Length: 405
Image 1 (cartoon, rainbow, N blue to C red):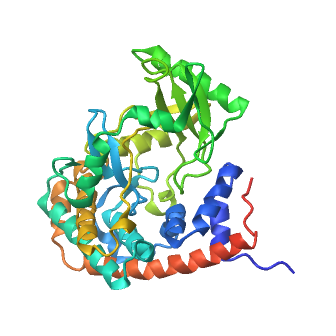
Image 2: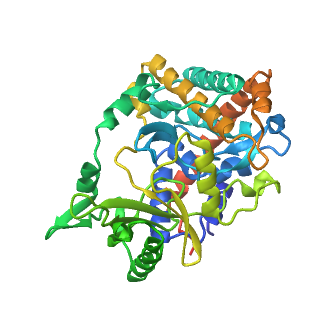
Image 3: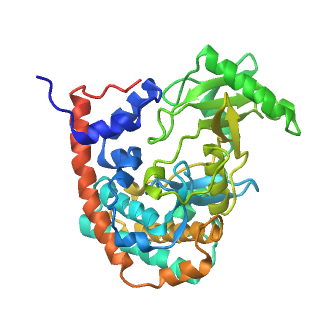
């Protein structure tokens, strides 16, 4: 008799049904590799499990990224060509109680703690530092930004390191030159595109280019399926090499990613704006919450489906907190920066399409009780994440996870 599949595995299979099987298999393998990677790849479980009557739901409703965790902060080059440190993933963005965002982040601290060399008491201290900075920034009521001159500690070190990173180095790492023309280098980060996918991407860019000032910039040189992230593995995604300002050294790499409905949508209730498309939702919230939007950020449609178009940049990077193991003070500074950045995004997007205005957020920041409740929930849910991960990884090892078509 066939063994019964654990309930958490069934939920993951249902959520990922219909995604591209080759990349879903890569996603499952990655999620089985550690509890934190599992947490990153199963955002839907966090909100499916959120208590129906939680005191934390009484918080102001704000725009949130929806999938906030330690690795969804990073650097990017804005459309003003300066480099910033900010939240950088908005696929799940939605209007919801601001505590949802902070609770997912705090849970991620507890889940990731063993992997970055931090004890459970140490993780609690880091989570408190995040919440203290988050509440303080809300109470201050003014949105600021993090760039080279205003950063501190590890974040400043990262920004200074990346300041000199050039697009040419990115091209050299992702492409190879053939007879004076660049082509994408296939491997772990790029899989071959089918003939049908190439035709679809080429047709899209022809139409897109006609509306741009320099249509030749978007002339396609090569297309591949992109392998990146964890939660989004399996959605249709391409890395596209375009002419840019001329071959071979002034070509550009673009990311074209399908937008799916937010995993939070079933739980967030009916009070959501009506968006033109899922890509329009992601791009609009990203532009509201980030201090400066990334270069080439567009909501587009290809083959009748929504996609997000943006530049693939040489300055995108994340902090390696494991390298700071044993230096709790340095990690605590990062937590405080992340807490402030979270609050600034909510303040910056306040008053838009049903989100709380600054006065409500200022008052909430000074309110007693919610931080302790949120800390308790994050620690308890992290235990469930580790239990779910063990069941999932055992199922993967047993060959029980075949991606649904």
